[in-house]
Picture 1 (cartoon, helix red, strand yellow):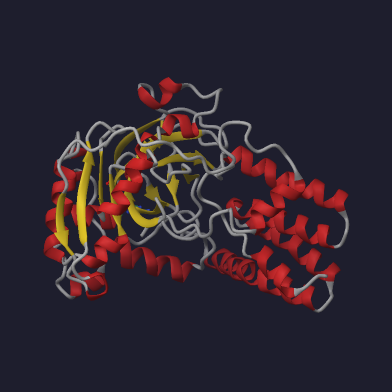
Picture 2 (spheres, rainbow, N blue to C red):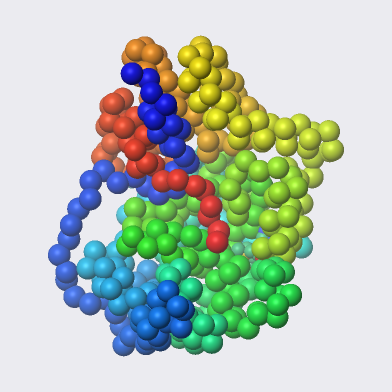
Length: 409
Ligand SMILES: C[S@@+](CC[C@H](N)C(=O)[O-])C[C@H]1O[C@@H](n2cnc3c(N)ncnc32)[C@H](O)[C@@H]1O
């Protein structure tokens, strides 16, 4: 039975961002990790009126300490699950990667880059999929708290969250140079320096079942490029983050990540970057000669449309055409340098072959997807994920692979 639901489900597998979870483990409460008393404010928002949101700090966690702005229930959950023990070195470092490189002898230096403020430059050759940088969040802000608190309360809570850290300077010295024209026009930009830093640098992360803004001070220095040479990988807990190389990087090259969901046209990218971060992107992709830029835009648009098209063809019983299009789409994705989409496309192809009863073909292509995800770091650093076609495709299909690459928020 090749019903539409089945196909639709498998098409929902999108780009993953977090290391995948082999099985949820429950751990016992040890003791409160907080080093400071909670400081709380009550919600002034109608939907959460009267609810408390507080700042909790653990100034010994990670390189900079961490402050969480959330409800007491969420903070308790974070403490109980020992999320703060999420050591980035354990989450990301492979056995062949040298611990020293993350602690004393990094592969990069932070320095001024003309027209961009600070930036991060490779100091030696970095190999494809190598872990370049690891970091742990120092500010976590529950989106519910952002909505619940008025500007004034959010400002005082954020300021305290930063002040209580081991090294507040690691946060206050970051760029606060976002370009939110809407806020500027409305003259609402009075959330203080800390709010501006969050707006410019924070990533969206799922932590303890809540959507949060997470600030990673080291990683914050990486500038944007539309076809970047590195990507971000969240730990399972969502509190640590690694920067991994998409491809070989030469010494002296600037490290870049994409602040936007990949796969957008030139005009959309320019607009989003100008609007939210206040700069005009002059990256390689944005500086292509006109004809090449148009060709790139067409590919980006086509790539976006192929999923729907594959689904339509499949539903019409045109299985061969659907498979052909999925294969073509992989070529286009590679040509456009959107390597991140490749594992999901392979997984999709494997599923289509399996639905047609061609297990051998499905094994061959599914394994490619698994192998790429493994190399990229999405399967963790251990041996938790042995290759098994059915398990793997199940995991891809049921949404275990996290949706959306929307790193900044
Ligand atoms: C997350 S920070 C990156 C690090 C920042 N350059 C710094 O000095 O700390 C984001 C800010 O950096 C600048 N930026 C990032 N990518 C850029 C680019 N490709 N061109 C120009 N400015 C950029 C913008 O001011 C943006 O708001």
